[in-house]
Image (cartoon, rainbow, N blue to C red):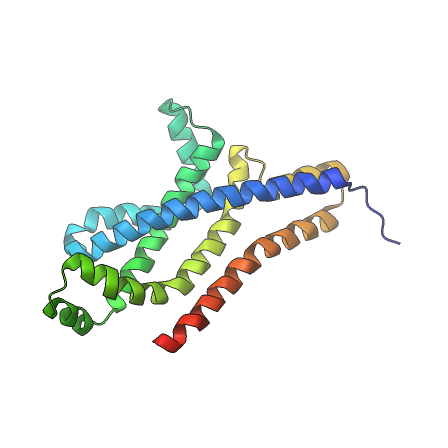
Length: 217
């Protein structure tokens, strides 16, 4: 018969770690998406040559492993005496990491809108802002949504790396319990189940929105 030393308080400890995971993910995805939309529009509007410095900077965040970015970011903020808490440092680095990928998603989605559609909008007297708001944004959002959902789920899983900065998120909380209770398979199974329960609604929401919008294409 299966027996475990895990208590209700231990499960609550895991759930608090899951809350930290959601907090880091939510802040990072929100800030990264906002920056990604801005950077993506800039890249499309000013062209590849003028956007080269921005592209190079974002390529750094896409190319360097996230763990190295977190460690270096934490070291640099200490050297600069910014006094950031681990949560702030984690959110800043993850936001830039998210923005680097989201920028390419937005740029590709905007470029996927047929030029003839945009020219037709402008010929009807629409301004650039009206064209972006009423024509480009709805079409580009449908195109970008699947990739953005995948990015969000990826950031949620990658947020486990913030344990190296001392944050007790879900994976770190499970490691603490594994060390204390010596039940790795059971505890990590619960940890994996919690990750699944956190990710499943996001994935299903993305699928629902895709099906809802597809008949209108």
